[in-house]
Image (cartoon, rainbow, N blue to C red; front, side, top):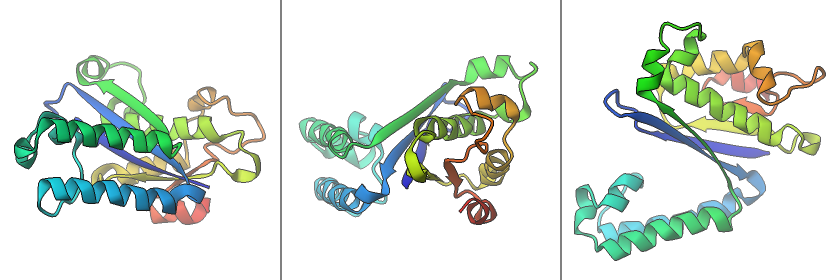
Length: 198
């Protein structure tokens, strides 16, 4: 069993592109990962000298907001250690990016409706990557809970797409005839889809 936590950057209409990243974690290593990440998070809070809700890479790397007063070498070390943590824990990273300008040019093309929504397109692509990475795992060890950072507006639509995906996506992950569509994805965007998939 796996968990894939997905977050995005560039979700404003004025941003040139949207980047979505999924961190794919085996649940057998989840508790250890949580403890180790907690140590890194505590270290970041100690540097920042106040309670943090989350770590924003753009703020750490570029010294924005309260990170401006933190020594650049300390910020660099923290970013480096966060990257090493992902590698050392042997987590997989799933990545998709989409250019807003190019997508706007395709708005009137024959693309399916959800493909013209940048967030939904990227979210579905992450789900397809989960399916492709895990479809050959024995005894359902690749089944993955897909958890997206909050996007309440589009979560229901994403759940519908993942529950009843269009047939043309089968080619992406080379679905064979005996396999249910997206059988490795357990979508948590909707409680009903979670119950039905589990």
